[in-house]
Length: 279
Ligand code: ATR
Image (tube, rainbow, N blue to C red):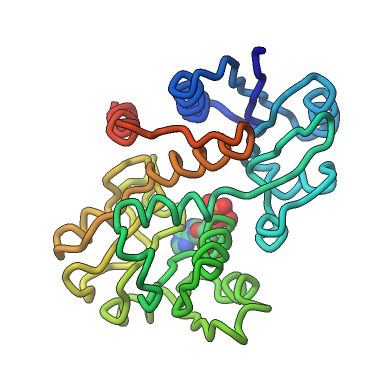
């Protein structure tokens, strides 16, 4: 049997998902194709019906459809529902179920490189940014038992909209970017989720890290470039580094598990992806 998978988004030019899932299929002996399904906004529902009825095993969803897709699905996993966004859909014989593997994939990658975090949930975490990615990461961290998570964001209301409904158990503080810069020494893990510093503006960063403690884990979900300005500064203060491209691999691994029930081995894909991204 030849399986069909795909990615829906608009525009989708340079996605790494076909490369990642083709590797996964080769490693697990699954035969199939992963196609880019660039979909204009007015053809979204038609495209979903095509996928539903043409034997697709599933598909990924990227901008601008992570929320817009929800009403077109038959069921929403609880985690995706909490986040309010879907990045993976499973097609069970025409019945479409939406999931979100971004936050869980992020957490899987973080604990892969820093395994002590699986046991120690007392770490103090600062999430910089309060967009879709930050929301997924917050929900995943909370679900896994972390309970000291604060936000720093340019627009305070956007962070408030994420923490609403969670604050009884979490007591999450929301800081301005300036306040965060002053208090970075209070955190064990700092996670950068904004798009500040992404190509074509690699010289920018959302906050300075001059106050951090040595060995703070500093994570950036940007993977273009691999060494963001933020991570370069973190390294100069002897922080422990966590790179964004690993989130990409682990969220894809989780999606593949949802489609096929098999966990594909990552082997050297971390290094290979790094080389691809570094050109
Ligand atoms: P994603 O889905 O990748 O998380 P997003 O939902 O557009 O993307 O979120 C972008 C994040 O980057 C937001 O936290 C945004 O801050 P605001 O909530 O204030 O808009 C942040 N961001 C984008 N440009 C920024 C900039 N120039 N300075 C600081 N933060 C910025």
